[in-house]
Image (cartoon, helix red, strand yellow):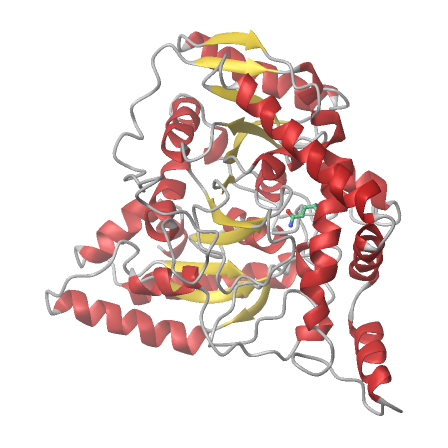
Length: 491
Ligand code: GLN
């Protein structure tokens, strides 16, 4: 029974809960029994809230029994990446420096989930401060890929993707600065949506690269991503970068989701295929054939500046990170060194002791790029490249409705394979990073498997604030294929 419940979509399960045919308590219990079984192997969670979750489920069940109105996510067990502030439990960002940090307020997305009657069952592992592509940079825990426990789940939202793929929650939230929702979604065979920059409030999301970070859903199917967007999208007075709804109204993302796009034109760019594994490329080509079978037309587009996206990203993101992470000083937040000699040591030792290697590397890189004499050569130059990349996308969308690319050049790699080679790790996001620089939305959907039975993800991109169309395009593929229905059997 419990496995059956967990195989339902979020839409179906909440509908049954709402009708009183299944209780939220049952759904929450099913998730916790799955966690009990699977978590010791997969390691997706940094914290879980069993007692609070059952109590909340009971509250929602009694609201329903009393005939009261309940929200869009009524009774659904949902988990969130541990870089979103919650007043319950710790908010660690996968870092020793925040291991015992308890936030004084909820992130805007948490408030929205709670307002729609979701049950937040736990917080998920991630690369420290969202820096990484494999979750191996977590300072607190190891997470493995549920399809093959010797492989990484991707990152930095690796805990979110692994938990959704292995049925340890119904849906999850992740954050994406350069690919951190889409790449783990593709490695774990689930759907991952990075919304347009400004569509979802970042209030209460611990900042990494503020001009790039965006929160989005990881789900088992496309329509569930739409359901989650119906809850999290929208303006927030507490986030000045969240977009005014008069300028970009928030649609109902489920309303037309079953309606395909007539005369769909797909853009493909040679630059988006360079360097990908043969098996990944053939899955992408097959997926595009499926679209052609549905009447889509394919045009070649040119993205002359996209090859510079990784370089520009690692200047911009690290520059922003060096500034954002200055607040972790041993005084305001988190870990403080035990016996400092003087106040300089409070800063230097607290940071030296509790930040991991990758975070230190990026703080140094970003500080260097912003330092006087280098600012123009690196930071300003990277910003100029960013504008060129943005105009590449604008130009491309004059010729096509959407762009299709692989999410990552490979499927999930082995644990330890890339950890000593930061450049190789950085290239794992070569097809996703430009999307954050341009601020447009992107989705990863399961589109095939390689010879090792590992999932391959198809990335679809559309212009800013057209998530509704993006979801419809993604749903076209899903509605005539079975890849999204396969679940990992190995754990
Ligand atoms: N892998 C990229 C990085 O390490 C992107 C991470 C992210 O999107 N948070 O920065």
